[in-house]
Every structure is written in structure tokens, then in C-alpha cells.
Image (cartoon, rainbow, N blue to C red; front, side, top):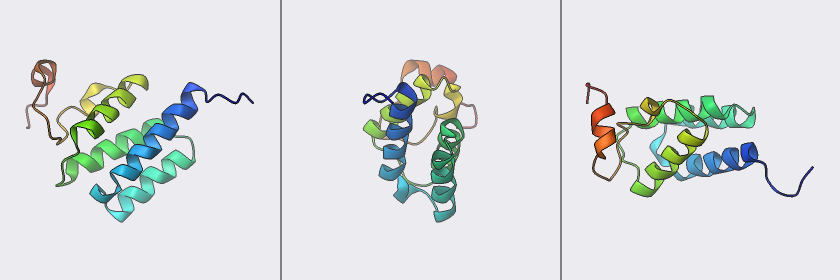
Length: 104
């Protein structure tokens, strides 16, 4: 196996790092589920579950954490509606405002 991380391994590692950074925003059950998906190589499910948990939470991510989440979502080709509208400490971008869910 190559010494360099392939893109999947890099994405998985970065998502795991983000999960650890935001673990205080999640319930014990949510954290267990997200970690379980990661352990089984299900990065997409882990990402979606993390977004759902963050959306239901009461704590805002930092702008840096949100940007990392957004980069990971784009890299994994996940629908942007998964992360648009999540609470974070920055103003809406124009494209987010145009796409944000009407329920917000």
C-alpha cells in the first residue's frame, strides 16, 4: 500500500477530525452512530448523520468548522442541501441565501 493517503482515506480522516471537533454538539447516541458509520467506511452516511445532528442541535459551529464541512461535502459530491442552513457563525453567502430551505 502506498505511503501517501488516497483521497478516500484523506476524506475519512478529515471527517473523523471534524466529528471529534464537534462531538460536544452531538448527543451520545448521535456521536456513536456517526463514529460507527466511519468505522465501517460509510463516509457519506456519517456526513449526512452529522449534518442532521448539527441541524437539530442548539450550538453553532465555528465558521472554520462549517467551511471544512462544506469542503468535505463538495469533495464527496453530497447534495449541498445537507449542509446549507446549518447554524454557523458567519453570514449567509448569496448562493446559500438563494438555495437555503424555506423553513428557515
